[in-house]
Image (cartoon, rainbow, N blue to C red; front, side, top):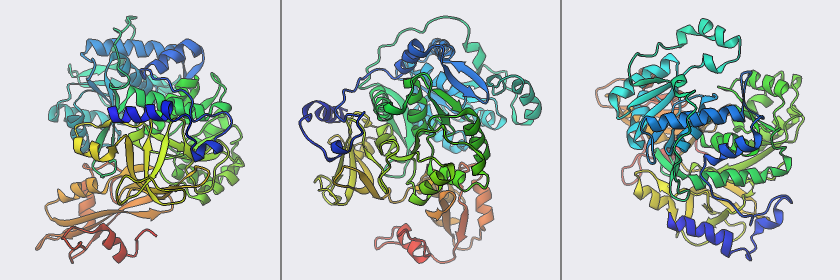
Length: 575
């Protein structure tokens, strides 16, 4: 932590007379040397309630909530969680789709003194078990869907998890949807067990009591454990401090400040909040500016276009696959996208043809590409609003130092135009991974976050990426880790060898393929493996294609299975 903090202070305080190439390219409203405040992350909501109490905070499928209403629920939840034993260092998991419950519990957990642990609602039971145990999660918050409650019943028995707070989908909907939903979707809803392990959300509200104030050390206290494969492909909890996330919210907010009307602007939230991109860029930045979050529980291209046409959001952050789906939709010309001032593309490289297609179809030059990692909260660079440089992922945000480091020695900073490893320093860089000291030391060295990505800076300070992390598969902007999928396949008794890799896909960006060699004397089909994986991996991780080979899979000189050689053999190597 001390090395990272020292680097950030050097950048902001000691290097104010140093000129960096990106400064000359900075938009007029932004300042790379701007002072950055450090506060507890939950103060974002307190500030929003103070400034924007009457403004709409959330529009969820037509039901709206003001910042004052959300603030009251945050306080109620914080108090109730404290009564349930949540204090500094205790972990509470969010196993939720996008809904009003997400920000209420996110800020409520933080205000109670706890740490948020984000969970993908599509996780299989095995994945939930691993993350609960690794993160030390004591309480989980979820919805009353049958598939989610069944998983919670399992993990309550199989893990350290003690309690589950259950939120009602119907209660979050406007009239008459709240009455119709149980009738139309009753088969998808669960009967909540009459068990002290299950707590209904509504019992946490209405007491009118203030939570006990918790003293937060923003520099050191962990606000969120965000699981990622990092640079090694093995899922680990990135420890994001209150400082990391508060400052990254501030940096991102400053970047778009000239286009925001505080208290009146709005963001479309179709990206899931359990993903760090949406958590910071949509939820936290919206709270900073008192924006309305137009919240959608899932992505459907026609529903998204309809919401944009009807509700006129100002901002629309998304991954390239979403922009591609809209650009290719046959009826896109029938919708009005003129309200959008800024689309931030992240989560995966944005192909130039996807950007051009989207902007030409919606008749709005609005996409800017950014770049970041979970380990830096996540935003590190972004193109100026409306001034996307072709092929670039943007300029460093205020207080953020981008260096291109020689890949051979891991230390020497390279010159403009030279390709090397992209390294990030700044106040948004995590102190390390939870319970993974070796990986932490390898990833954050001398205050630099070593990304594993290869890139270069041009003479104007724009960052260009050449390669992503070697083995990471990016499916619709979500990280899929080959080793994690391989481990699940290896659980099948007939499998001897397995290699999983990403293959280019026009709609998904990349898709997951697996190559399998059965054990001698064993026979297994692709269909059998797919069926076997059904309860072990999330849908996004399930291979779209499985190739069963009789011959051994290719290996390196030391006998290690070689993903690179396999892709070359198959004619699928990335160019």
